[in-house]
Image (cartoon, rainbow, N blue to C red; front, top):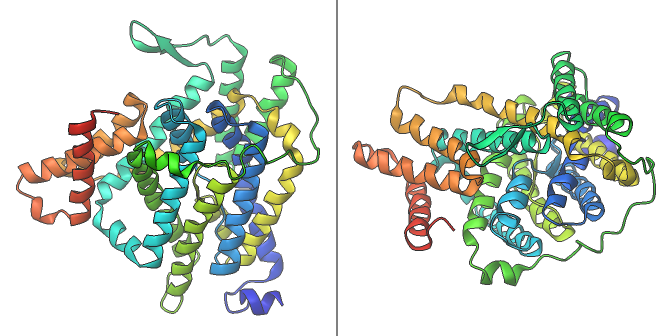
Length: 431
């Protein structure tokens, strides 16, 4: 049955290889079940319910990817998108988290629409590579600032805006230890390096940080406090379509880039198999809508899926294995609730460092490309807003191309997005 459904022989794989690949992918991305509740919990969402929503959204999205698209790609609430949801939209703009979930739902619905009608590829091709890189790097810098803040290494300073924290404090010391452990394990190619780092710091927190141990396993907590709590009319009436646009753009670049990158590594982007890619694009769009209904920020394809592909995963059976493991995680809620913020901080910082590697792909010789990318990246942490960074990047790109006589080479999509953000700056200020 598995052979017929997943076409294992045709893809040069077998059940054992697929299951091992699924385990590999899961170990590299399981950290999200600890990190996501911690981030969304800062926005006032109930952590136990978010934990359940995270596991279910990851399992559901990954299962859709495996069963519908037959791709070895796993999905879960995206890093960066959850930070934008919590720290910018909810805490920064004062938007209720229910309304923010409504914005995620709307962006997901738009995502489904552009995937169905075939506009997704057109939009992607119309947005310059430099701005895509700037967005990725900016999100990385934004995550790094959040990580250092959660660890107590960077603190508020009235004289200099930011300053160094107390490096003798337990949270800072354990966060540094966790970060070094993660990087070392990753270099040694140890599977689940990020997960091991989080768990190691959590264990040390019980000994040195006064953390209370509440057990490891239990029945899953209730999902009632987040299930169907999204406020779609509120998202529309509050005029936060700017938030929807940012969700949509980041989801578009993140998910599409990840899907194509992992699929290319798995040898799936070849003539005769492009229909699978179209199905995968629709699958990840649907997962965003489902995640918002469950009660979590945008669900997206994970680049960590490349580790499973490296281990031999070639079909949706790999994704199904990941989905089953995420469902099994539902019974580890007490452990997830005991993870302190400074235990997830090393994971955030490590992910941030990896995201900065894209800077090497920027054309630094052409300042009309490199400067907007740099502005986009720098404005995110300095304004504490992914939305502002994207807005400044697009407006700067359009303005520099126009002033330098290179306007003809700019796609209409870029002009439209830049015009939307410019309109917002003129009539709404920085709101």
